[in-house]
Length: 72
Image (cartoon, rainbow, N blue to C red; front, side, top):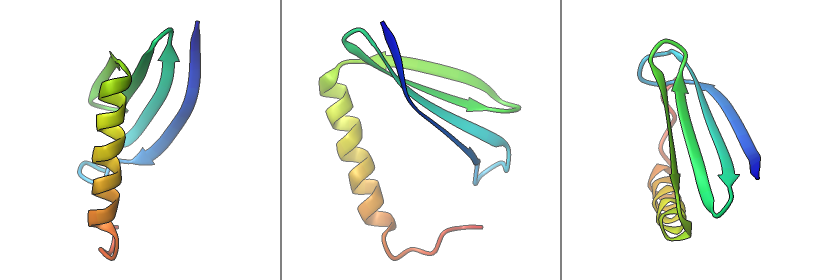
């Protein structure tokens, strides 16, 4: 069974192209899809160990960005 967890739409800060992140589960795997409106798609599936590593990396990235003005 596949469950869609989140869909996040935003402009890519590098290209300005429309971008989408889709997070879902498929059985025992986590799925992450990245899509650029004009640049193609990729979807990968991974286990809970890699999910923990991704969460840790994103949390560290968030900490590093704290206090940094966003590029607009």
